[in-house]
Image (tube, rainbow, N blue to C red):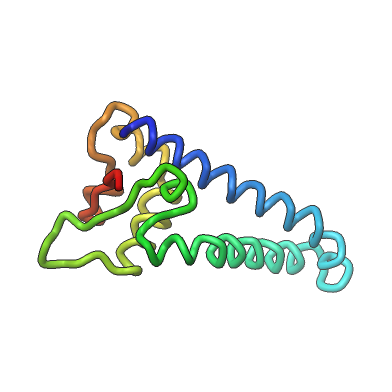
Length: 127
């Protein structure tokens, strides 16, 4: 299960990097010409983040990400009095994993519960 979670995270990271690279290659020059370098860069960054969210949205509604869906993994709540909602899932995916992945996710490498699971009171299961 640990191996599947790590592979799912890698797929999510690679997907995000590909979207960023393609967006920047296609959009930085035109946006920089019209809006200037700094503002154009911010527009492309916002567009890239929006694309990532839009592509992930169908999976997020099923309590997954693209990587988790590929490996048939799903996030569930461990707190029975607090059902899993989209806001909890977004908190888990964005704030807990992306903002501090290398610190919080290290326990997952050793088969332990990750910090993102503890903070958001969730667990990843295999469907």
